[in-house]
Amino acid sequence: MHGERRSARITQLVARWQTITFYDLDRALADTAADLARIHRLRGADAVYAAVAQQYGTTLVSRDREHLTRLAGIVPVLHPVAAITAFTIPPG
Image 1 (cartoon, rainbow, N blue to C red):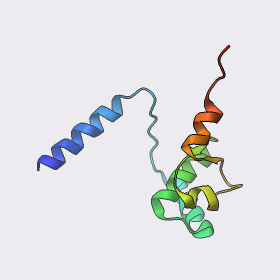
Image 2: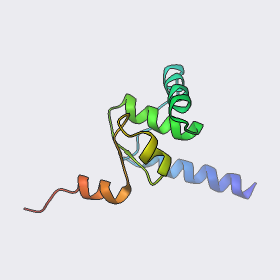
Image 3: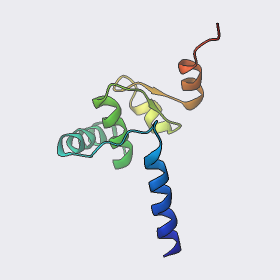
Image 4: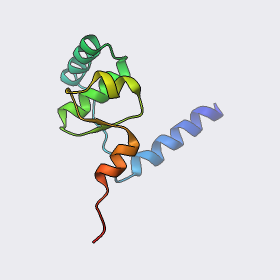
């Protein structure tokens, strides 16, 4: 039970972060994820991340080799190091 309480507390804290947006996994998004999983040989959760990035026109930041290789040309995918470089505004 202790682990469940800790997990619930972490979930509550994360939900307060202003920089995180939560999306409902509706039928349309689930169907898109299923198609991505089938076509690009992705695991379920990985396909959901890709479907969200695709639907909202954003870049998926991931260290997952499958994301970086199998989603090329489908959704923009950057390794975290590349993302920091790409998203950092030069001084001055």
